[in-house]
Image (cartoon, rainbow, N blue to C red; front, side):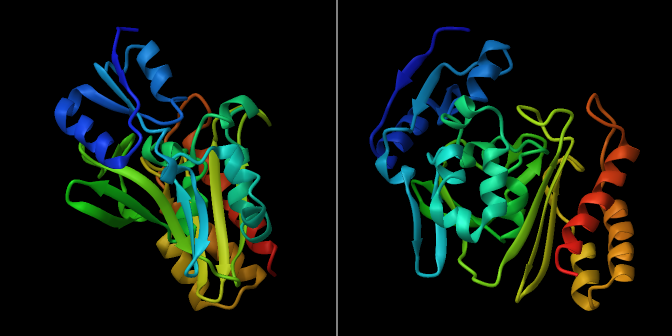
Length: 276
């Protein structure tokens, strides 16, 4: 790796000033489990590192005003082992704990997983199905963007160079039930071949998938069909067919396009059978 300048601000304002001063030469360091790898492989060559881990307000998981807020620096293990998340949103806890090894999860963050914008980001599918909002801070103040509008393409988001994601939030809803699936070649420490989260609540069904399109995606046609029909064996069968055609997977080293479409059908069927 090339030598870099390293800064460790203790406030969002200080971090923003550094990003403004160095522009595209600067990269934010959070958990670092993705950035450091890219730097070692020469895929990323920042001249300045802005480490945000000393900004205290980014380490919080808060439940207030009927919302759950997950700070940008909350590690995956802390999220996956948080008692409130385990009790009310076990599918989100499961997704967080499905990523990498225990050592990686002690460094990696949920927000880092989201901001990397990998098509197979495991925490993206539960958060998409939860209708989560991303909180973004800049010199113009704080703006909130729905997660389903945050992703642009493979490893691309709407985030600008001079912006910092402070966290992500979703409505705290007692009616939510959810199922998370991760299909991979190995049981532990592997990337998803397909991942999914299906939620049922008083507001309807919410279906999200990863590794089946250039970004993690909500399957809106599938959701509409489920919300317009009573759940039954026949409804589930039809929904699975719709879902398999709504995704746009590719063939790669982990799986073929055909296999991924089949896995979409299987995981959706298994998820919906939980409530039949």
